Image (cartoon, rainbow, N blue to C red):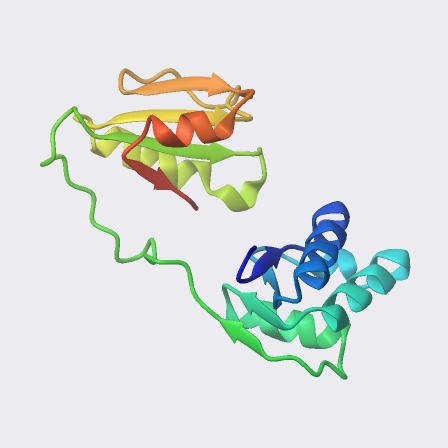
Length: 168
């Protein structure tokens, strides 16, 4: 039995998450980590408003997303909490001190919001670390410490092979 169910505004995930939460009588948390502007008009807006009204809590990773959510559903009756990403890139320090036995996983879907340029800067500066990239990796350059895996069957298997997951 789950203690809580976390979903997103992707229609299938949102509806399945809501159904699971209701079936187990547990809170349903809607997590938003990217732009919600595409949900501001037409059928997408109707879907988003229904999802926002159905959840117990909403978690976003930036203040502007809280404002976007409130713009889509002005009469929202659930709390919207901002939990920022763990490390702001402006203050992140990259070091090579841990040695080549540390493997970092990076997932990219080709979305410009994934900041592949920042990821590649980290790869080039941390030359003693090993990096594995999964997803839309065709645009990534060949680098000695970067292995481009492309789309994989089992993402959980790749997570288990790495020491760190880099999420931009």
